[in-house]
Image 1 (cartoon, rainbow, N blue to C red):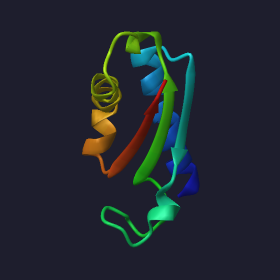
Image 2: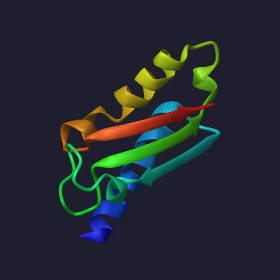
Image 3: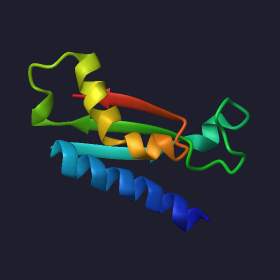
Length: 90
């Protein structure tokens, strides 16, 4: 199961790389820290993520617009059960 969930973070990374051409990107699964919270699946994996990203596509955009680009790129993952994504843009 852990391999599948590691694959989820890798798939999210690939999607963001393709969509936003980041100069810096880190996708962290923080699900274990949210055990018992809304959206947690009980496994400690695959529901809560942190994305740290810098992209030239963010230039001149507000923080909300930057976050929207990230959410739009990851919409399929959200639809498949990712509950929360904390986004840090640069």
